[in-house]
Length: 130
Image 1: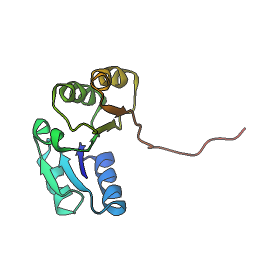
Image 2: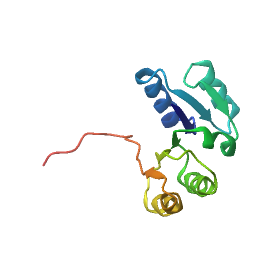
Image 3: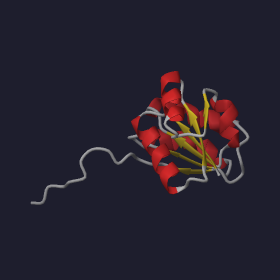
């Protein structure tokens, strides 16, 4: 299974580590525009391959995880809608807001591509009881 993680910041690299630990046979393609992030992920075994070209690596993926700022995710969804992706690819994101992302994902869904809007579970998980 080919998993593309676009954005190797705290959330993207944490996902890569979790996938590596739980699914060691998965091939993770790390994609980032920051060469230092790519080098770190590669050096620490978080990814199997690195790339800076989204349009080249996205069509290879069985799962695409967009771990970038919301505005970048929206642009990436538009790019993905124009590409020939694998028939059963799953696309998800870790953006903190969903309204604009879900609207941007509609062209993908209209092409029959599965999009699952995600959310990072960051911050406190404790609730105050009254």
